[in-house]
Length: 191
Image: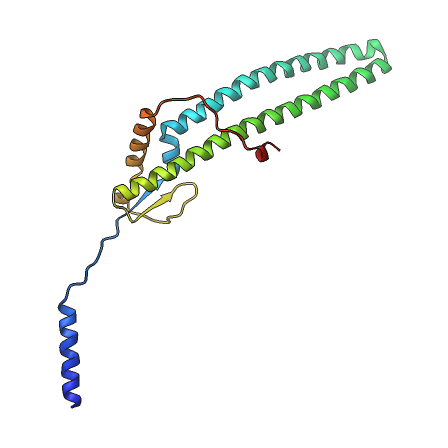
């Protein structure tokens, strides 16, 4: 009886081994996110936009700084001629002006950083959504990200689809109508 059970079990095992298991291939790839952001046209345009704004607003502030430096140099030469009381009063005014210029520089930097941060967050969200849709459309099970915030320690180059993603994103960006509307800055972010 035991031999019959062993023979039945072995024959069942042999039959189950001959059946082919349905194995689905897992399609994976990765995108080098640092390369993507350097070569994506919309990201380049966004960077250029804020660089131009920083230069323009910086020139205005630089003119104020130049005037301040000229006034400070003039103060140095006139301080002895006009007496100590004049020098103290004028020195306090110059110090206050210097402090205001420092605050203006900080405010300008914060404003530009906040505005660009909002647009960059929107851009990154759009890229993530695009990659997700691209992955679904092209049958990928996983698309990993490498670069500055690496989530993959190693991947073969044949799985790198960065150039495909950049090309597709740039084509999509070129096809979209251009608008000058700025994303709204949330009230909480302004405080």
